Image 1 (cartoon, rainbow, N blue to C red):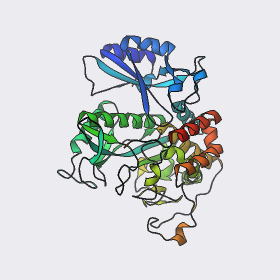
Image 2 (cartoon, one colour; image 1 turned 90 degrees about the vertical axis):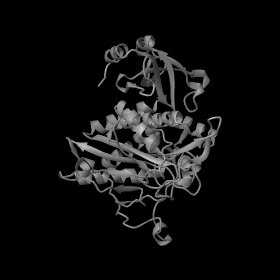
Image 3 (tube, one colour; image 1 turned 180 degrees about the vertical axis):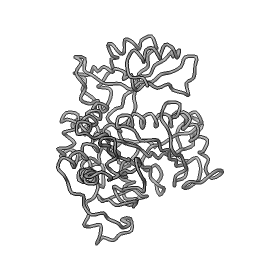
Length: 423
């Protein structure tokens, strides 16, 4: 494990890396990067690399556009699909102003702050993501089409499943990068796939998710395919979700196991906080117009409720034991900025603990088939991007995490984009 600048520089020299990619996440979940030669890496650690923040929607205006990115040594990874000679390294970066102060729009820093707040309360958050995606064929120019790779369905095998070799290649590359896949399978939609990887601390989970998406896109492109993380790329077919599994450790024990006195109450307060704030943070869990084509359909929730094992709920407690006991938040989709999403989810849960919020009674019914006499009494998630923007704009919790300036820039850019999306 590399943790220091000296260790990173030594690894870069010994691995004969020639090229270094310095990455960060824009406000809307897109990975950006700038490349340098290995000989410039020490200077990047010392002085940073200047970027034009005004060229990135939601970052900053032209009159204060200079930003500097500084590589985080602990995020060093070798890109396995770019072998030597001339190996390629990748770092994720911290973003600062020219005077050295932190940049308010650095979403990775915001997640660090949320994680540090958990640790200050004696709680260690653990997050695991289950990310679905579609594989589409490309045309003669290499552009994406709407033709899915296959017509397979849930957990089908070859020949119905034509994505098995792609998933295997993705998993092997992830493993070489220190991200341990746990399961991989065909999902319900034609050409739809899912790969799940082991849970970790919150910051690593967000880094891993961003890396995962970049690996999926790269391996798909190498095989003449297009990987789509759109929430609902095909009308009438299953949407793609990003189920977020969360647990908390206190003194080395999982509070969701409920084995120690007070742990069950702590877990309940945490869940209650997330349920209360879910509508307000939905903009950051479902950030596209297309996101609202998925919610309420294909096992994606529409209401604020919870239950055990029930996949029609916003929050469920899966059947699991020991360290794997957790809550699963089912509304997010793969178009998120994972740093903002995880920071807001954790902050909402901590608020529930601090205020000792009471968890409502579980809804042990199928909400997808329930009548209006049941659903009319439940709080709803936003039904559109504009509704989600309005709720986030008025949320004290969102403002406390993002800051007024960053929140305003985010919302302005989101409205200007009009929920822009790709297949």
